[in-house]
Length: 154
Image (cartoon, rainbow, N blue to C red; front, side, top):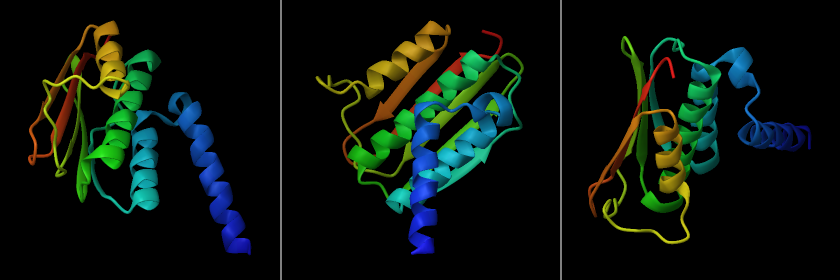
């Protein structure tokens, strides 16, 4: 009974964090991404490999956008890809931050339109709002790769 209660509490905290990741400001983007990756791995039994740089030097607005893009890309992997593995990669170069999420799933036609699905659209909008670039690379049977490149000082 105690174990079940602890698991329920952990799940509730994770859901609250997903809605409003307040610890993003206090703990940072790296901690938030690590928590999100661990949550996806635990909830969906999907192997998540994480390669993250040190905490990026960027405004909170940029960090939140990167977090939300990673969150959406991971959710898309869970919902659509039928993947066994997903990789989450973050690096900061002198004046930009690069986020990549790629999986070994079934892939999709990246040039297609997906009426009613807002995930890819919201990623594009977040990146564009910050003056960045988003690449979506995928083909049926070949997995998917989402790359967001955002100026660090936006």
